[in-house]
Length: 496
Ligand SMILES: [Zn+2]
Image 1 (cartoon, protein in one colour):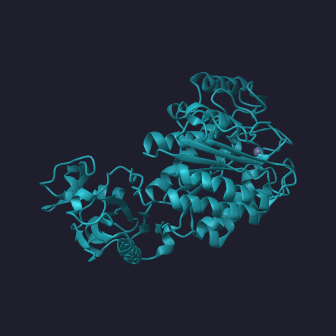
Image 2: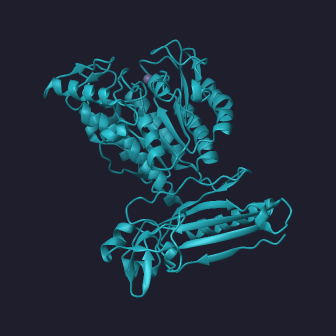
Image 3: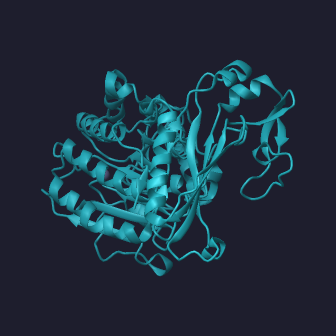
């Protein structure tokens, strides 16, 4: 069967909105499970440089693949498929914006096209007699034929796009979310959850030449009350604020809901920690980074809707999951938690929810005592919580087996569109609190397993959020191992 490849480039037609929202909707999955995605940084053309001062930052994405129903294939047998790939090459909107006033532009710059759901009116600008939408080209490719030939054609086209995009290494940016304001959360002398936990790892990442070449350090803000309320009750938020205010300008106190120290800087640090997770997701969704690691404190996975405990104030991973669902069109999120303690807060929040799958591997018996394998969810959420508990002394092999033999098969059914990782390092063999024996290499292997799942189902989208871990040097070693895996990760180009 002949493969028809029709390529149509719309002349410097710019797409995507002029705001910094360059979100691409979740990819379409065919019933064969086939998908294609590519995210690349492009070099701007000479024209773009000259006319719009674009000097960097454009992104190519295979935006969607549609499978045409068989009725449209004019009597061809049922192995006949059609895929459409749309590639958008985004320009840097901020730079273009500076040059010319923005206007509403028709879909794809075609003045006769009616805006619709797929191609709404977009912000752009007029230059001479041309209308530019913010971004560069839109290329559409159609492939008709039997599935195996289509797969091959798509792979070739993706390879071509990838090559055209220039330096492939540039896409492997790992966003690290860190702020010195996290150090303002003061837990008092001798507390294991202290600011040294972050200082050591950040100094290492900034000082390591190989790693720092792929790292980006985006700015972020405190999560808004509205964002926090997608997870926590208004009463709990008020209680936290009130108890922190009551401390005054100096000193520390215990949060009344559980064993968590608070200080005058805790409100800013903990809302910022939640905000860091959100921006990590933003960076990955926009393609500005291929993955992200939020080096945050206080941690979050013990915090439930109504109560902070176990050194946690707000549930950072849960807030990020709800943000993805509410603002980014993501339906199914996996939260994978490998902290040595059970993430009871996260489990509680999503226990009756079938849109967020919670997987936890942890030591048992250990604080907080929950997370037995029999806890699998409730109601609509039944089957969407998965717990693996390990006896003290368990090491890398036991952990890896859980990821490979328990989590992976479950994800074949759930098919997450985004993966959040509650990354605690108190399972490290050198940790002063935990009794597990994971090593830096073990964490790297776990990260590879998770990345494999992300590549298979979620177009590679993965964000790690720091939870526990009380030996600063162990955190540094393990974060280093994971970021090295993320740095060397291959883009998910095709998958069956
Ligand atoms: Zn822990």
